[in-house]
Picture 1 (cartoon, rainbow, N blue to C red):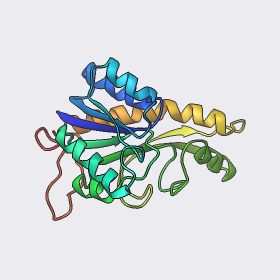
Picture 2 (spheres, rainbow, N blue to C red):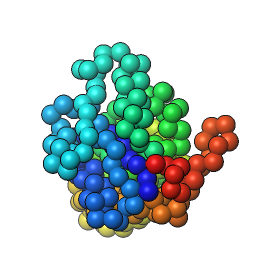
Picture 3 (tube, rainbow, N blue to C red):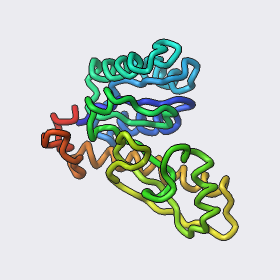
Picture 4 (tube, rainbow, N blue to C red):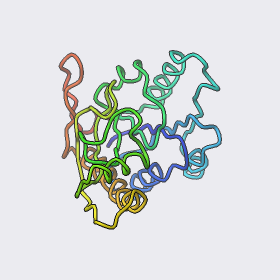
Length: 214
């Protein structure tokens, strides 16, 4: 089984989908901790209701970026997180956390990478860019996080059709449905050893098998 640390910022609907999937056995794993950079985020109440460890860590608790990064890394490690999931987390991951969790930080992006990614490409802005580009297909991408926005290795993608009458709002609604399902399916495949993560820095194998992500 895998142990998942979740970083998230707002309502936590994506986090809730993963919590539910762990609880009902679709994902063979557990949520080790939920961390939010927003002290009033609904996701912290969701975590409390599920009986999960939860923390608020942000610039309010640690004004210096290096210390905040260190605190996040240490909290994840202390709770035994094997992989880190960004579920609507609206901050860039710091270098200490990325180094400790090299090739183990997972994000879902609301478009088919490598297209329509990069700094500032999140939320409605992504779908507006897809419509403006005249794309006929969009979707969601689960990928590993690196120091550069949306450039990490792709683990899975799922497509949706961009219909002639779609605008950014209607496309966003379609993508949201598949992006949560894709994320849960990808984490489930990781937990069953059906997907292996790339080797970590230094050449250490990074299999998705039990005992290596827990």
